[in-house]
Image (tube, rainbow, N blue to C red; front, side, top):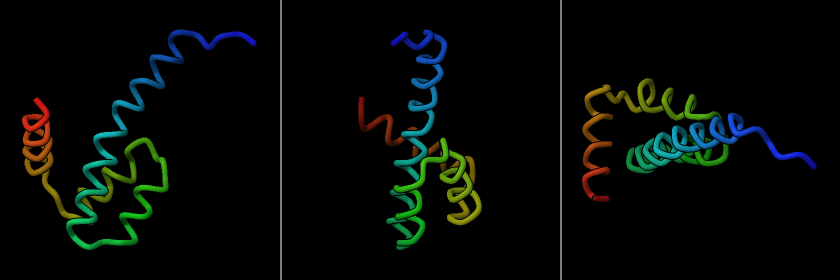
Length: 79
């Protein structure tokens, strides 16, 4: 078995780091808004952030400023 190229490993890492915050934030928002079907879909389906971003901006009607503010708050509580 040959090892995967470094560029492929880096791509996977970037996709994981991109997807996790969107998935967590979208699932949290769905739960907060009592959107049970969306919550299940967001948890089960892996769409590299596309479904999560669609949900946040179209269904939950979040603005880009809301999203940035919430991400900053969450990041600040981790530090």
